[in-house]
Length: 147
Image: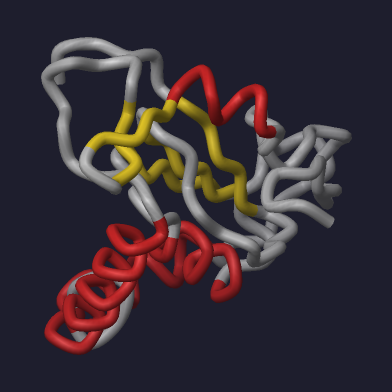
C-alpha cells in the first residue's frame, strides 16, 4: 500500500486520505530548491517538506511527548481520555480531534493508535511523509495561502 492509499474506517466508508501520493500530485504541490523539497503552492511558507524535515519534526514530537508526559498535557489527560474513549450509539459520530499544521503526522498517528475508535484528522499545506497505516486517521491538504 502506498503512503496515501484509501484506508478503511470503522465509521462509514470514508477513505483514509483525500490526497493520493502519486508522482503527479506531488509534482503539483512540491518543488526542489537547493536540494530540499518545499511547498510550491505558497511563496510565504518556505520551510522544507521533505523526509529530512519530517524526521526532525518526529524528533520534536517525541521531545514534546516526553516533556508533556504524553500526547497532551498531564493536567487534561483524564478529560481527554474520557472524551476520546466515550462509547457512542450507532447514530452518534465518533469522538474526533483535528491537528492543523500536522507536519509529519506523528501526533495524529499516535492519537489514532491510542484511540482507535476516534476519528483523528491531520491537515497541512504539504503531504505528510508517512508510511504508517492507521485506520482512524485521515490526512488532508489545506489550500495554499499566506499563512
